[in-house]
Image 1 (cartoon, rainbow, N blue to C red):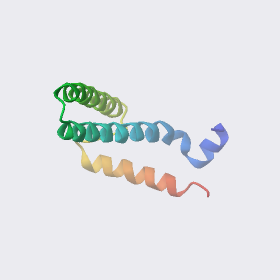
Image 2: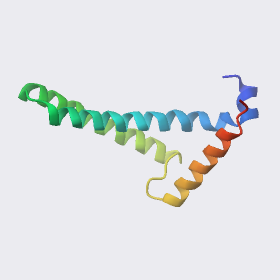
Image 3: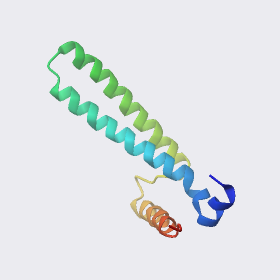
Image 4: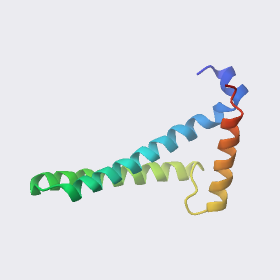
Length: 98
């Protein structure tokens, strides 16, 4: 994205936040989908493969969560801080010219 445009709209501060949060939400969805697939599986061999994928999906989710927490992009244990961060992101998004 154009650097000038990013600074004018405030997106220069949101880019990493938005990418990381999107990545986290997709990882969470992957965990949920894998878990559902495990419960629907009839074949023991396929179930074992899906369980391995579920473990990997959970590990990925944890790594993304830790990355975001270390950089101050996610505050799962401090709800008031997370709410303030979310409100700031909402306000920035609302100020983007259409």
